[in-house]
Image 1 (cartoon, rainbow, N blue to C red):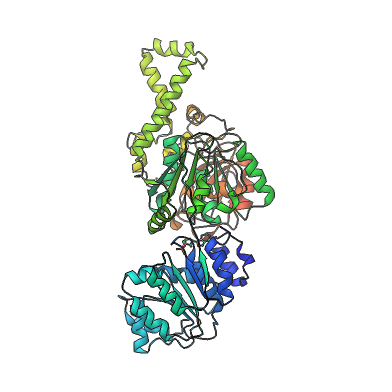
Image 2 (image 1 turned 120 degrees about the horizontal axis):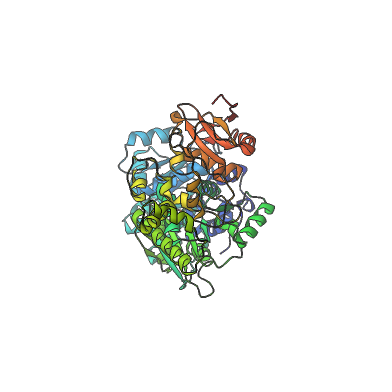
Length: 595
Ligand code: AMP
């Protein structure tokens, strides 16, 4: 199904700026097909399911038609429910962000008339309403439609199912004959076809079909998850399955940047691709990914299109794809060459309808699963560790340490205790905050005030190649310099367990570590800044591994961050002007002795 860049569709600079701000990289198939006809003033019948981007498909040409100097209703959108009316009005608001003077108002039953009168009286040019309430306003004379240029029927089949047929016909008969009609419906039963015949003129038909084929080699699962918990779920799944090679798809450039930064800060080995990245940089990232120079590529559909990698272990749909076709395209990169691949899709809130539509219309074979608990993740990690230990013993892949073992035995420890203590250390127990706090890692994570940014998972991953060996430990990221942990700053190794081994090197610290320089930032507790926010920004903006950051000392209005000295000036230069919590950063190096 064809998709084109927005700047090839004949749109105004205001709309182009808005879609860019919304993070859309290219027009979806329905947008590519509908927008040019909409702009040309043609009536359009669009058959496409929710989630295809149909709202922008009709909103964009409708906005382009509005004369902002004229303070009368020029666009009327009819929707079946108040939720949809509000949602569509929000989308209009975003798309018309740069078109100054455009006012849109949702009008639905259950809301006070007073507010609606005020907005109409103030001269809203776009009304998005449910048929019943729109009829009310027409009957009261509080909404005049003489200047109407465009009428949109959104989800017409649902409106008929809900018994709005008479209201819709009444409205359609009452609006000027010269108006343009954009008619959207997921299905086309006879009643809908009758309406189309009577109320549209020589319409262009646009049908976006879902040609998705099922991919038997790919195990496909979706999770219903709270938007804010998506990152936590993502890292749990990566750890649970011990994935090492996959793509994580996001719908916008902004989300790609944010997620890449977050994962980076948690110690995962990632890089990103999206439309704003230069061609040279893209080629570099793609080559590196093919060579498995990092584990997870965070990307938009557009950016990942030219990437000929098809032996991925996993594909994550961190954001839902536009339609079933995009879905199939995304997951087709895994499960090749007779190998079983996995595809996980995250569904948040209202997206469930979109997911169900995709499954239904695209005849997709995706099953729902519940989010794995932290205990399950811990158990799975334990199993991986056990296997690794067993293989090491079996293959005798270790140097003997007889002398040290002998010394411990002489001091009265049994070999079982010694082995248990080593496993304890290797499993990251050395990362624990001193004495207080709950015992198991799962409990610690549950008790952590900010589990979404600092789960134990991150301290256990060592990235391949030149990627970060590990992020600063969760405990070291806590408030104040309370943990006395030496920040780890050493060359990464390809061994995921190397990060755990490094816990042996920890020394108590006092003041600034040698090799580190303190950089102060003008944000602190007052701005609700967390250590992970800062580490994420530093790692994301500079592309340095997160472990160049040492201790973090959060104060009320500022935060001191220890940065490996050779990178301190770069951090100051790159972070200046970057926004965190709506505050523009002004980093500065703190002279030695002044911290
Ligand atoms: P809709 O089918 O209109 O309900 O849109 C579904 C979702 O896709 C909404 O969250 C839109 O903001 C988003 N969307 C619409 N068009 C695009 C696009 N061209 N690129 C990325 N996301 C889009």
